Image (cartoon, rainbow, N blue to C red; front, side):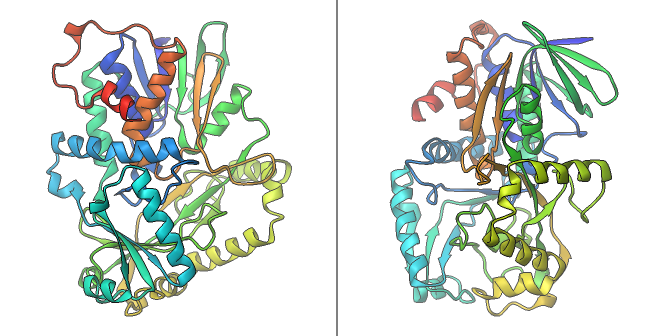
Amino acid sequence: MKKFDIAIIGGGILGTSISYWISSMFDYSVCVIEKESSVAQHTSGRNTGVVHTPFYLDPEKKKIFAKTANISYDMWKKLAKKGNSSIDNIWKQVGTIEIALNEKQHKTLEKYFEWGIKNGVSENHLSILDSKQLKQKEKNLECNSGLFCSRDVSTNYNVLTNNLKDISENSGVSFLFQNNVKTIEKKIDSNKIIFMDNSELECNFIINCAGGNSLDIAKQFGLLKSFSDLHFRGEYWIAESKHANIVNTNIYCVAKHPEFPFLDPHWIKRADGTTEIGPNAVPVPTPETYDGFVTDIPTTLSKLAEIVTGSAKKLFLNSDFLSLISHEFQSSISKDAMVKRVKNFIPSLETDYFTKRGTAGIRTPVISPDGEFVTDVLAREGSNSFHIINYNSPGATGAPAYSAYVVKKLQEKGILTKFKNKSDIGVDPLWNFEKTIDEI
């Protein structure tokens, strides 16, 4: 049986970032357990690829998320320059315009501008533009006003996470691919992880960064038993190349339904030069249902039973939520419906400009015992374990700094105490831990 000091469950952006910090500073044997054949195969590699500037995050309610997102911008840029790929292919400063369709939404933009400044964003990167000014910048964009952020970047988080994995491996981290966790047996001072193929692994401490499966793993430790989760697939359509530059900036909309974690329609400029519109938010039974609706009958039935008996049941009694879900199903079935939503601000679009589906991603919000969406990350300490649940957007953006924040918490709890000798630490570390923590 393999044995490690620390096992990180989940080879996404967060788990890989945590493995980097621990392996670069501490003298522990570390493994990252990932059920797929490589890192960043799910949410980490299936998002819009935007390095977000946190102007839309409340500086009081989302203080840590906002700070880590702002700090991580330069950290990602440094990794992009250091990686094996040309930076021109994974780091394109295209900017973002958050648009308002009416005067009420314009008030939200004014609030966002103030939030951005409080979150540490330079005024040089933010400006509120009226409809005429927007027309001068993007002639095919029609709306009341917009908040232009020149700093936003389109990147490829899959490439960045793989680059970070290589650095972690060089520091001694073992990435154990195609190992799907079945159960975890908790002992007095260790944990035994049993995989689907009945192989086993023993570790002294577990860090749960399992994304859409993180709540299920936390429940094995007796945590968050009265909470539920739901999985929503977000789908996109790719613009044909001859229509891809109708607008050359990322376009986001002020949310019509801020109480629900569904993203309003975007116009996204990808790092590879393609342009996509989307998403919708279609309920699916698993965090891996990227096509169709039912691929695993037992899992689907299990999820339905959880909805009927768990906290999500209250959510499905909410008429506003049901109305929104109905609309999202229509957008999934009908490309016309999705294009129609984007035509509200890019009216020159036509349905036949889009002939191929883009990359679908899945978001897994956690539902509280009261039947409401949990808006914050849930960090919980368990028996010889630490769990990070509900780590949603802009999680990818803030992962370098947020993972340092997690490692600092584990250090303060006396879990990470055995530092490497200075002679064992690289003379040119990718990221500076103390500087990152000081900025948070």
